[in-house]
Amino acid sequence: MAGKNLDPSSSPRALLGAELRVARERAGFSQAELGEPLFVSGSFVGQLEAGTRRMHLDFARQIDDILGTGGFFARNCGAAAKSKYPDHFAAAAEAEAQAAAIREYAPLLIPGLLQKEAYARAVFRAYQPTAPEATLNELVDARLARAAVLSDPTTPLLWCVLGEAALRCEVGGPAVMAEALRHIASLMRSHRIIVQVLPFSAGAHAAMLGSLKLMSFDDAPPLAYIQGNGTGQLFDDPATVTRHTLTYDLVTANALSLSDSLALIESVAEGYEHDAHT
Image 1: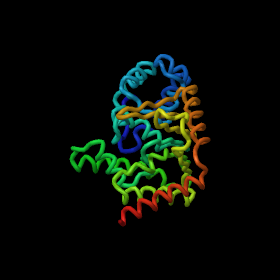
Image 2: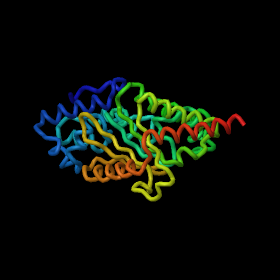
Image 3: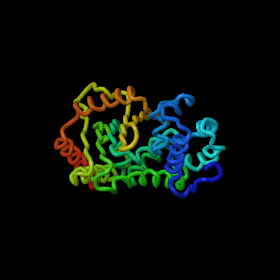
Image 4: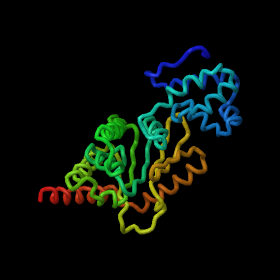
């Protein structure tokens, strides 16, 4: 293995993870035993092997030293680390693509997986008002590509709680908002996604400090992702993920029912359509 490089065109992260599992087992290490000198958990090693976590160069070099793989992982982690997403979101986006279930609370914006092109373009233009159009096109294309995970009729399970502000904030104008909300309503009516709305009337709630994304996997431990303005952090510590899961559960308990949420989304969309026509 030490003399062979991975083909970057064939899921390099998954291939690198598979090679890590083979090398670890060949050396007689458990995931926890390999994680100890790396100062990470065994579950983190499991996520590297499953391809849900990116292997950074410093980890790759240490793994080569520990497992005696002759620089294989250091040579190949560059191909596995390439991403079309910003650094603070890349690991979360790539984990999202492999998740069996995604649960997300979005207080102010329609989540990226549910955005339409015009909405996404308006968001990115607001973030980067002087960016060239070509830059915006790349960002929009990357965001829309994420939605491809919903092309499967059942997997992943997507359950979103939208803050009412995400419906009321007029991103891109009435026509753009009408299209965005009708898209969500259509996915709800076709039973592809679950969406609840957390109304303004709910008052104080458990997730007032910001957005939250939970991801679970068939072959790896769950993750929690917290995102801010240009920042993001992915958590795999079981206690932290459990705490964020409770936060999400409390938010859903305060949100409208599925039928009331759909009715509100369609009502707000109708209002935008009326505004667009007048």
